[in-house]
Amino acid sequence: MKNKFLNSFIIITLILVAFIVYNKFKLSGNSHFTVTADTVIKPGSEISKYVTQEEVDSFSFRYSDIHCDEETNSTLIPLRKALMDKDTNKVLNFIKDNNLSADVTMLDKRTPLMYSSFYNDTNTTKELIKLGADVHKKDRYELNALAYAISINSAQVVKFLLDNGMKMDEIKEIQYYYPQKKFYRTISQIVIDSNYLDVKYKDYILEENCDNSGISRSAFEIMDYLTTFNLYNTARVILESGYKPYTYRGKGESVIASNSIQDIFTKEDVETGEINPYDYTVYKNLEYIPNFEPMLDLLLEHNVSGQPGKEFLKSEYEKCYKDKKSDELFYEYYEINKKKFDEDDIKVGKTPEKENQFFPLQKYMWLRHYYIYCKDENSTFNNTKEYIDWKNANNLLKAVSPKLENNNPKIIFKNTSQDEVMNCYRKLVEPSSSKINLNDNCLNLKF
Image 1 (spheres, rainbow, N blue to C red):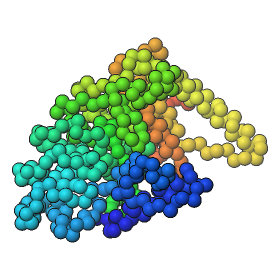
Image 2: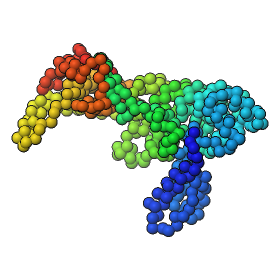
Image 3: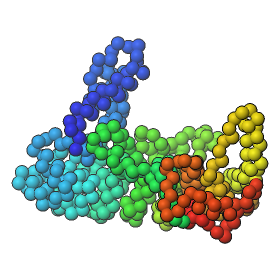
Image 4: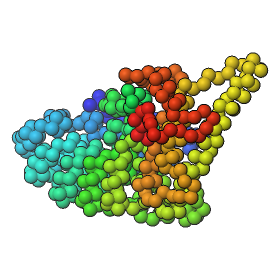
């Protein structure tokens, strides 16, 4: 639990407001207002010249935290702890012994049901509803028990709430809580163990704790959140309930979603190609995460809208094939060009750049990639699955390949050696050629 969170929150809020005032109205002398998370900005007031109610509410939302915020009502602190401990008997006894409502108002107008839902405590959630808890109640941030359950991937509670009268359309947005962010940009290590290449990701759990008060918990549209963080179990429960996600969603602090792209962007932006509608679908999120296949299959099974059209699939295939031809030329002339560049360096007294010992592996991975996905010139990706399979593998290679360099401490060898692996790949790639031996593979590559 955060110590003295409310005081810290007010200080952070004041810093934000001061920043806004300084940047927007630095020539004005009227910057002596005190603003807290509870400040109401009245239209036409002096302070409304410097900060809007929307700005205060947005900041308050992003720095609220159902898990870390301390209960300020001393009477309710034992109840708050029992909810976090998922101690159903203690929760129920406390409410009954103190003659409290099952919807007793806690910090920020949260209720016990919101806490039990957030902590994936199905048993306590059931008992609170039996006790009369209102599943439809919302807190000061317009979040309800279902929103909190979704945010932490509490799939069991999500299903229970949906089965007990809650509807997905009661939620406009959810707040970011899920601590694991496995994206290709967060690769921390590459482990080569025997004949297997394994990609490791940075662990954010230690960073996202209650001692770190600087975490911004932004608002997300529901399916955008579930696909971004690959929360398969909750996504499955929601889609199986009959929920139909919006086709498009905007990016930014304010959540906006619609089945028409022109509700989010101007008609001109769409028609001129300034924005690509596909980039604002849930399918786009699957291009940057590992183990995306179950989520993709789930979306396709439920025919979630936003799948790319035939023209788009054709144009993307052409990009893949163009990259293939470009890389083939690069590899065919690499040895010749490397020799020439080395000679030029020596002539001017420079030491030639040392050859990357991982070059055979890089070369093999890219040429194999093109052979799998776009080897024929006059072809196309036939469907959404084929396209995202390629795009995801392409993004993974773009993330891994630059890390395959000499003396990189983030490359770990186990039960083998760098020389052993690279000597194997040298036998599979022909010098000054784009040909590779696809009948063998030194590592069990998954991409």
